[in-house]
Length: 348
Image (cartoon, rainbow, N blue to C red):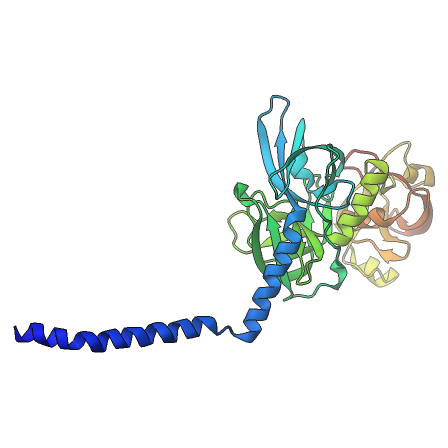
């Protein structure tokens, strides 16, 4: 009985304490930390503004069976959509779902496996969401905030954030060629995020999300928007990317010490020509199997990937100078008229 009276006597005090705790807790919740509150408000505004421009893409075969899903974003008011090549590869039918639930057919304008970029056009004339502003990927800095919006594992309009972890990475595309200046972030990406935009803190597109390393955590890669815009313009204009082509196959070899000392070759490797296309520009200029190519327009040429990078920026029908060593001793500057790259991915 005494214990019961003691408990009863404590109840008013406990109730008063609980009331004070609720009051203090409500006050604490109502008081937002200014810096974090501004960041949070900015992030929510960014997502609300950018979200409607991000779409989900369904890839189906001729029998209507799903082959995969991915993300994309609206490029223009006339219905152009950018995504990854591997999202739309081998598709017999493509369906784009907007954030408001509308499902629209889409036609493939063009795809570039070498950069994993593709452009679609919405097949139905309808009101499209606003386009996303383009940023400048060349101005990115390590540590900068990065935001991804996409449809991972079918969860539409998912948002994830992180920072730029590294810049200037190289990523091997499905065609075997290197994509240069790839952006590495720790933004969590999953299957279905591919083709979606990577945004900066202003909501501008700075990359196209393209790959993760299976089994790793917080290592994600995006094609820089500067590369993607160039490719998209080529796809819209020509249906394919018109790259320079010289018609050689080769291997990367270590540079012998006498080459470095005697000629001042500034790289530890060079390209040895293994095969020359009979009707290609290199053959017409006189380059032969066994030649060592050490420079392109005065720039050291340490590898086949470096040659591919030069070809990417070289306009067809322009002239370029290859510095070639023949028989290990004879140095020649060979002028080559650059051709248009054929569709064979392995050819340089």
